[in-house]
Length: 390
Ligand code: ATP
Ligand code: MG
Image 1: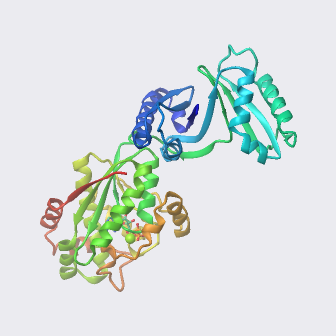
Image 2: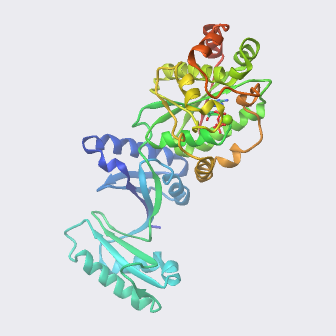
Image 3: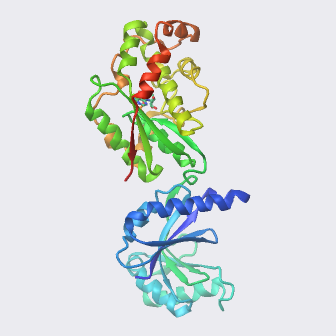
């Protein structure tokens, strides 16, 4: 087939002296991601990553889609390669892009010449190949400014490459370069999106989910596992820490004033997430909170929940409207699972009139009725860990 995948590096190229380690991480992330699709040779040269099928039986289509979900890549294209010869390039373009050339009304050829030994310059190559294509497809008009189809020719070290327009990649930075964070994953729309957004900045995630059987069902837990799985193509393999939360919720309901249920529950979530962070070497927590969305997401309420933990709490959707969050959740493929109607532990024991402007000292006072250390420790001891992979 002589077909390969070319990937363009994103922000990685701005990393100066660290660039090498960023690139190495990106290459190893791509290699791991492509294991399911056959045997590929993956290497980088001149800000381009080459993904070459090694033998027959490679699923190039699948590999291409997978590469477009790897953070650190800004654009991707499939390309045909041929010998570095002007007529070979023309024939390659004609056969590889025949359907596109027939369908388009206007076109141009754009050439990049990395191999300065090649006897023609970029302009000459474009004119030569463009001229022959024009004869072959007489309906086409040349439009150098806004062509419907741009035929790209790249003359590089080993071969010449021909391809049509490239498609956007996932952007961001390679997973693992930004350290590790613990993301609190509920079954809702927001937390899968916030997980995705932090992973996009190069962060490996540990997922934490709190569940409260029998108040929350097995189906609700399966839904969260499904959401975690849907995040894997973006975020890579992850561990889901499933934390038993029933005893804590029942204790809060028994011993604390109703208006403070949610807030005190959220403080336990932060304490427990921080314990997971300490165990896994994570340097921050991530939540899907958005300012003002519910009573526990006012500035006063956020301050009260932050006060129990010493790690930074990253809230990437804090300034986003629900509609904006939904758009991302559709794009990354978690929306349909998120809207399945299973209850979350946040939706059991919800107060009728939750406090929107709590005062920290009051909350600490109400919490003193609880055996905070014992409750936290028993929940930590009951954590079940599941590896989430493709
Ligand atoms: P989501 O749509 O993600 O459920 P939400 O807007 O419904 O978020 P809340 O239910 O108040 O908000 O929860 C706020 C955040 O707290 C969530 O985005 C998530 O990060 C975390 N969270 C809530 N419930 C759980 C849970 N059962 N397990 C883990 N994290 C949770
Ligand atoms: Mg929720």
